[in-house]
Structures are given as structure tokens and as C-alpha cells.
Length: 176
Image (tube, rainbow, N blue to C red):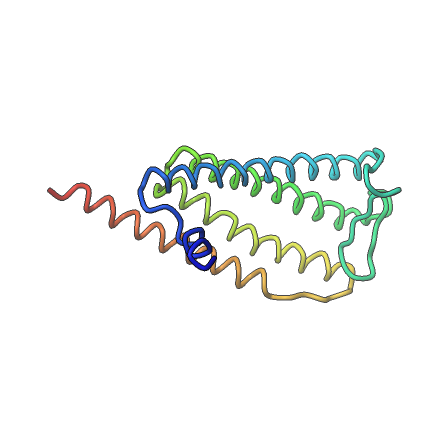
């Protein structure tokens, strides 16, 4: 039993099997990301245009603890604009993640495109936190956590380490 658990955790021993595992995991994450993107776009458009919700009787947008909106008409213009920008940036970040998973699925692991695909979601977390800060400030209902900022900085740091590793790998490939 312990052997099987260890074998599953440690994974395959050769490069071909590792690449197949990366490709399969990438396909799973691509499918889940596409599903989230499609549902998110429908939710966004359904809220804006009053379409029916497949799950609840009404869609709601929560900008802070005590500010829940059931239609765009209820939202002040600045809050609506910030919410639209925030949501569109989330869709953009989801597209970047799809591109990253597609590169991983092709076996492209350490390139400048991958570094950008990792770095942008880190920046998105920080920008999203700033927009959330503005939303809650406008609603005069501050209840913020700085965790997204630290996670965003951590993701940017990991992207920087991967970029340095990529540069070292490229230098080694050029050396004879």
C-alpha cells in the first residue's frame, strides 16, 4: 500500500512519461479553465443585461459586505465601471492562463512566454486588490485582506526565478 502511494506521488521515472503527465494535467486544467471562462462570461452578461440565471432566481454582485446589487441600475456609475474593469481583467487573466496551459500541453515548459504567463496573473492579483480597495472605499465599507497582494508578489517572484532558470538553461545550451 505504501509502495503504491509512494510510486504515485513520485511519478514516472523517464522523460516521456513525465511529458505525458504534464500534457494530461494541462488538458484537464484547460478544460476547467474554459468551463470557468464560459460560465463567467455568461454570468457577467446575464447580470448586465438581466438574462435568467441558471442557478439562482437572481444574479447578485457583492462589492463589499453590506453592498449587494441585483442589477446594474442599482449600482453607482463609478462602482459599476470599476466592477466591469475588474471582471474584464479577470477574463484577460483567464485567457493568459489558457495560453500557459496550452504551452505546457505542447511540452513548452521554460520559455519567455511561460514566464509572462506566470507573471501576469501575479500582477492581476495585485491590480484586482487595488480595484477592490477602491470599490470598498467608494462603498465606505472597508474589509480588506492583504493576502492577494502577498500571493501576487510570490507569483511574480516565482516567475522571476523561472526566468533566471530559463536564462541559465539558454546559456548552457549555447556553450559547447
